[in-house]
Length: 258
Image (cartoon, rainbow, N blue to C red; front, side, top):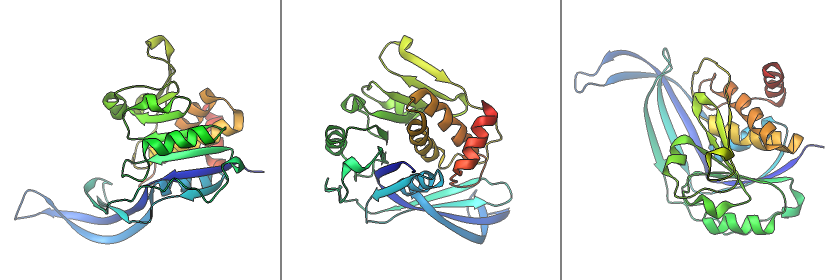
């Protein structure tokens, strides 16, 4: 029986406008992109959902209704991102009410992109009402409010924080990840990432969060989960645009790495 997860977070749409660049504009020092095709994929927390589903987890999803669209203009030959245009409406905060029974879930995943859907109070409420593991990816800076929660942030977010919690995971790009359980450096454990050809880092954090959850539910061990998540994210960055590796794909990659 697959594990069941409740996902909460702000979601949107990732749009990719591909084209070719053959000349520079005579009006400004910019490239002229001749559009050839467009792709649309679920973005933000919706991409986390795609990654959880690809790992064969059961998922219920609470998210915003207001549209957020991120449009990337990409030179198809080189794969370079020439421009990103974001269209965002003001999000209404989540009511805090869930149509689901929290006791039905093996884990809660919170994908907080800082658009206003998730508040500190929401996260603290979930921690108080749910007895299982909670995995949080957040832009919020007062991490001490999240003691007892597995918090995943990137290196820039770590530098911007004003406090830390007791279960902090910091992704370090090509240098892997750090797991920090206290203020002193002696409480820091570092994990290396495999060397791969990086094609696009878009969506790697979403893959990491989903795979961290999957790995923990498999073994109930956060060290194993971090290594598993690093392996999964190393697959995503070898693809163009957001990519959700399958359960079989990640397990095979992780077995080969181990």
